[in-house]
Amino acid sequence: MSSFFTDARDVSVNELKVINVSPSVGDPLSDLASHIAPGALHDSAERCDAPKCHPETRVAVQDEIYSWIVHRDPDPAQKVKIQWVTGPAGTGKSAIMGSVAETCKQEDRRRKTAFIPTLAYQLAEHLPALKDPVAQAIRDKPLLFTKNLRVQMEALILTPLRQVTVESKVPGVVLIDGVDECEAEQFFDSHVSPVSPRAGESIERTKDQDQLEILEVLREAALDPAFPFRIVIASRPERVFREFFNIESHKSSFAPPLVLDEKYNPNADIILFLQAKFSEIRRRYNLSPSWPSQEILAILLDQASGQFIYPATVIRYIATSRHGSPQTLLDQVLKVKPSSGTNPFSHLDAFYTHILQSAPDPILAVKWLWTIRGRTPLLSGGYYEITTEDPVAFIVNRLLQTDNGDADY
Image 1 (cartoon, rainbow, N blue to C red):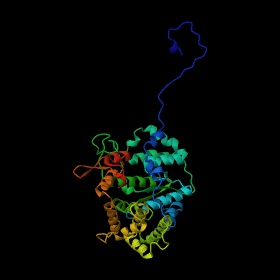
Image 2 (cartoon, rainbow, N blue to C red; image 1 turned 135 degrees about the vertical axis):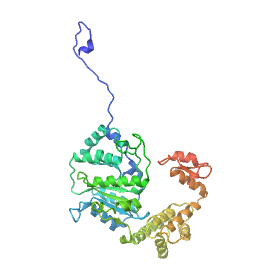
Image 3 (cartoon, rainbow, N blue to C red; image 1 turned 90 degrees about the vertical axis):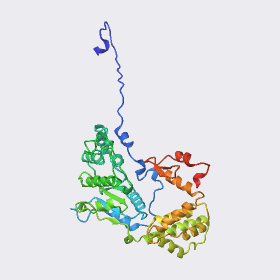
């Protein structure tokens, strides 16, 4: 106290109040929240219209995935924690994953999709015991979010899990969809990546390398005794995934791949989907109960080639277009002929082309699509990428809309 009254004389202090003002330390969990991808969460607002299986469709494959999540393996010694769900584009992987996530949510499983910071945030949210260890990891390593995926997984998830006890009657599950479209934007320092010429310098890598790193980190996490969750990964059967899940030294870590092929009888589900959706359109427009005929349903089924994306696109076109009656629009669909019949997506490709060509200004429509995808048109007619994120709708509108209503094209 003497430091407050240096050289003072005849001073009497009856009551002293000291107020210490210092900058507050930021909340580590708030810092973590700023690094997550909210749209990747299963129940995020961005995913309010995310695809899910139509009722009573894809039941067998959903049951198989859910059974693997809930029940123990036939051979307890294997203790596999990763299953790969694969199929070409349009086979319904995202819808299946969305429906399985809903089932897990209804059954109160610890589910959520995403990667490192997003996964860590969700685990801390649903397992309160993890909050303090995760927060401490962020305090100890302020630059943690600039590290590579392996370092983040260890610090944000595995180390905190080793410090707590996770009690659950059934295994939790991490559902990860669309890894084949994922790119990990990272910076590596000299301690992590010796090939980096300077600390903190970014290293340009291929999409395959990024995806392989994600798969490796997930596999290592699944093998760690502290990681109590099962992992279901859905992707197209691209080379990096085929090779990863077929490495002999890795196979013992994985459940048998679940391939969305004819085994699950997609045609029966597609017919059920078409019948239900056409029934909705009939009620809305007061159409004949016999519309469309069984022959037309058979044609649409054949053109789908087992891919759900084709009937889903046809129904969306007929149900939402403002350029004709349902019968007129259905006739347009049936008149579209592909240039080649060998590609299972030939009818879908031809249909997309028809939709673009039917726009009042097809060139303008293509420009809108390019810009929405993060590219902007040049005067020469070429395109260059301007951002790695989706552009703001206001900017797209100002860039491309000459007259009010252009966006409706």
